[in-house]
Length: 87
Image (tube, rainbow, N blue to C red):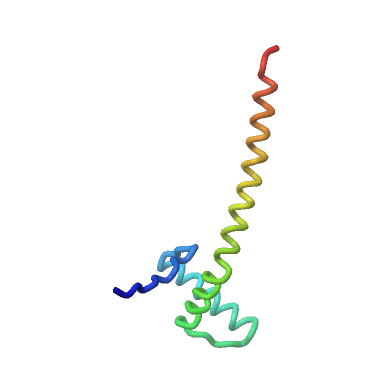
């Protein structure tokens, strides 16, 4: 029995409409900055590359940022609760 490894699921899942918008943005960027006429297929391939390579880094940084914000909020709530304590 052979075991075929499934490709890892991408960190970000975009709808077809979102992929279309992002693909157009990539095509526009390449045309404007690099004078490169890119087709839709190439733009989506580039999008997939960035999602695969950069997605986990961006996701992990976002998680760290949220953890920091939540930590500050919980510390503030804890401080407020201590202030309510009666002696």
